[in-house]
Length: 152
Image 1: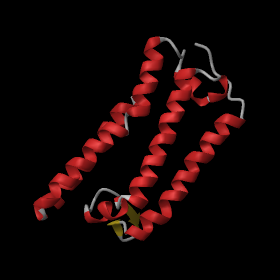
Image 2: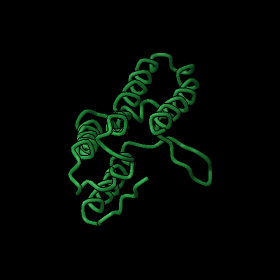
Image 3: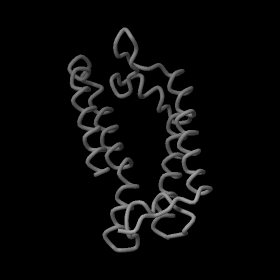
Image 4: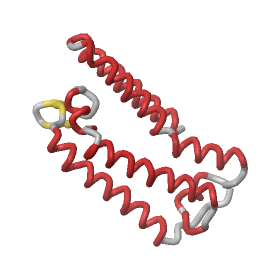
């Protein structure tokens, strides 16, 4: 299911980018690179979860909310998310990812009363850590709180 959501988001971005590629064809390679990266990297945690569920290492997806149980597949899942966070920080701040997003309009947009507009480099570099800290807080809560795992 999560893989389908990632693919659907990629298709929406792909459709949205067609307008910008028609206006500026040299951006097509960058859009394609972004979509392939999104589809590959965005699905790594979900593939790990699928392997854990299909192999029987995990009993259900609720186990992924309880890493304190030290299930190896759950730990690999959480580790993959941390690695993706590190790679995203590296890309946004040290590999000109924010600039890439701005030069490829439509990848990330903000909504306001006047409609949807593209984001700026400053906005990306300001809001990205806020989103990242939200994810980190969620992961910390999973390690602190005893989340009951339903048995089916």
